[in-house]
Image (cartoon, rainbow, N blue to C red):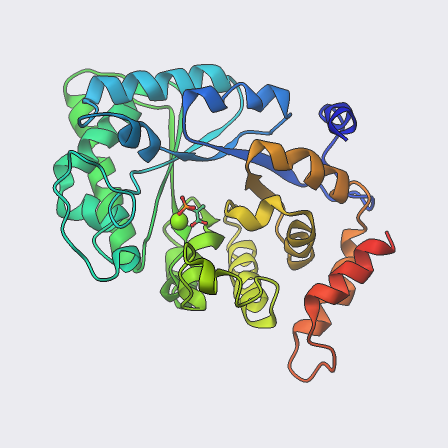
Length: 325
Ligand code: PEP
Ligand code: MG
């Protein structure tokens, strides 16, 4: 199997009917970066910047952050990297950040909420990213956005930092693209507004599913209670892909769903063309998609998402479809 996946590394990531699918990888530490070449990923679709903060014993200083981001960009070379701003708080505790007891940490003071309330922290990170990406491309997205206004507030911090650096004669990135993780269901009802502002979106299906079904992603008692391939959730995922495609805004999905072949197949059937996953999943997903007829799958999958279709068991349908490929 491993050898088979290695052989696939240099093969095009294209379905049997000629649909190109970008396969990117998720990363969070420098040790992940060699996988870009080894696994043949098209880029880093999600760089979880909080990992550096979680392994440190005190807040990484601006220069330390910058050094890490510079190394990431150097190692990625021509391949794009999508950084995600700090997603700390909640269950991702930093020992040196005074944490408050919260009844529902996943829905608490975390991620961009914390960043906007403590702008010094977020601005330092933004500055480090701008320095690291000077004279090259910077792609940055914000986690746990629930309202368009939060993105605009974050964007204005980026604008301020860019101005500040220019005023002091520092080089800035040639191109800055800002995006949002779609992982809070409220965003699904603001897609048209949101897509008018962002340069890209990335679906965080782990959190999106958790909040969509109100099922704690870390609680084994309930984590498998609902199917990620159920009609409701697939309709939600389709809503996002359709809206992004309508607005010509690039959309990626970077949650764990993307790394499971059957789920990845469903995503392609829904219209996703860019998936980011752990490096170990790239081989299996690529092997699946190279034998997939994406057009035929969509033609058979989409009617099943319409109300009144007699067969609502999508997972079994997908298994049968896959067995026939
Ligand atoms: C997600 O929520 O799907 C995601 C990719 O982010 P994380 O798993 O880091 O919360
Ligand atoms: Mg998330």
